Amino acid sequence: MSLNKIKMTTPLVEMDGDEMTRIIWQMIKDILILPYVDLKTEYYDLGLVNRENTKDQVTVDSAEATKKYGVAVKCATITPNAQRVKEYNLTEMWKSPNGTIRAILDGTVFRKPILVKGIVPYIPTWTKPITIARHAYGDIYKNTELKVQAGSKAELVVTDKDGNETRALIHDFKNSDGIVQGVHNIDASIASFARACFNYALDAKESLWFASKDTISKTYDHRFKDIFAEIYENEYKEKFEAAGIEYFYTLIDDVVARVVRSEGGYIWACKNYDGDVMSDMLATAFGSLGLMTSVLVSPDGKYEYEAAHGTVTRHYYNHLKGEKTSTNPIATIFAWTGGLRKRGELDNIPELMEFADKLEKASVMTMEQGIMDKNLAAISVLENKKAVTTEEFLLAINENLKKLG
Image (cartoon, rainbow, N blue to C red):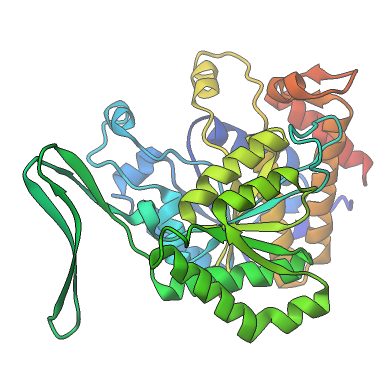
């Protein structure tokens, strides 16, 4: 690489985060990016303290900035529960920043494992990565739910534009207290999800699998199936055939069985909750959540890159005590490289794209040399491996980055 820093013309949207990943975020910038790139970012602090101070307006602002500039890189953030509300003295249990951003961008989340020599998948037939495409709108993530007292009756009521009501009994809670939940989706979002998946499959030249439970959910899930089928037949069938890939639909339980028996190398499209669960399962089965990339793609071509894992709370508390930590930074590095590569692609800066490629290669090289965090070292089958601190890991990656020129 040239001694002169690579110039950027358009800023990335930078979304800072929480706890240990916030510490690693800065270390990655200081060690692996700022020495080589004249980094331009529009910065938003999505740490929980600032979300509280701004009443979560900062999250909305960061999403709107992503719509403006087209590319964002996001650090992992806390989604508060009751314990976090008390810990951070919050005035409200703020919603998931990822959920808010996904809703504003109307995006689909694509998560793909990073394959590394020495990290053997728990499913030995998986020789190629499996990409999870997660619908990022609706279902339980935008639900309404209530506790119900015995003797109550719950109904689903829809009032049309003329004031006419349609009612359906959910349950008559005659003899017991209970709970009730209402979920929704919209055709426009499902269609955006479908097109994002079909486009991603064409770009990756990989087949697309989609699954729901339409045999049980004959209206809700069946709507997903119908919209996918209609868009495929009308807009993508000829393109898929020309590319030599296929679109395949089956039931969610059937596709799980097929996935386990497969060799990988395809995109698995999931509804919101299915994708949330299955992406973590795949990440663990391939090796680690720390080796899973994640990108949110909007229908109009906006991109937000992040790590698939959380904020690594336990390591953060150790860090506050002054202890050296060994936390895997790879997924966060790949969030940065994904964002930088896309920025270079959109702005026609080949040097920036080349830098992103080299940084990813240096990261994989380092792990395949046996240098890694303690969690990866615990599952690596390499004979000569060494567990190092996070900073030592990043410095070793930087040495390999320099060797790549």
